[in-house]
Figure 1 (cartoon, helix red, strand yellow):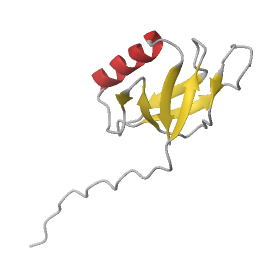
Figure 2 (cartoon, rainbow, N blue to C red; figure 1 turned 135 degrees about the vertical axis):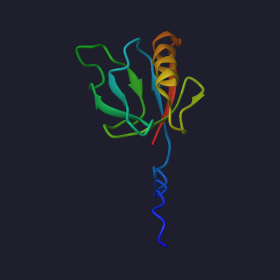
Figure 3 (cartoon, helix red, strand yellow; figure 1 turned 90 degrees about the horizontal axis):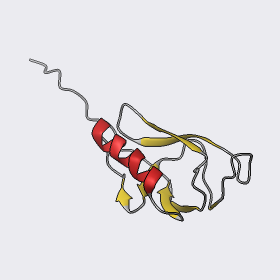
Figure 4 (tube, rainbow, N blue to C red; figure 1 turned 30 degrees about the horizontal axis):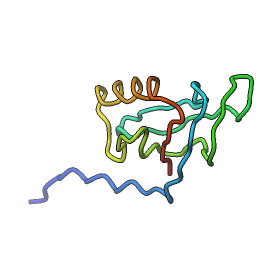
Length: 101
């Protein structure tokens, strides 16, 4: 008898973590929590654009948010955790330090 067991998801593979420091109130990034619970960067406004975005460090569309304002985001987030994280990003004092990979 052959059993139909669900396949375990493969491990998320990410590159080296990089620090990005946001100095402005607006981050100039569009974030998305995927169905897998992982937070990804969808798009980025250029630094010093019309939105007055000021940041240090390398960040790219497709990067995965690993840590923000001291909160570990390396594990999948539930909807509630995601809502809390978004609120935290908005109210955290600047400079705001995040890790992406």
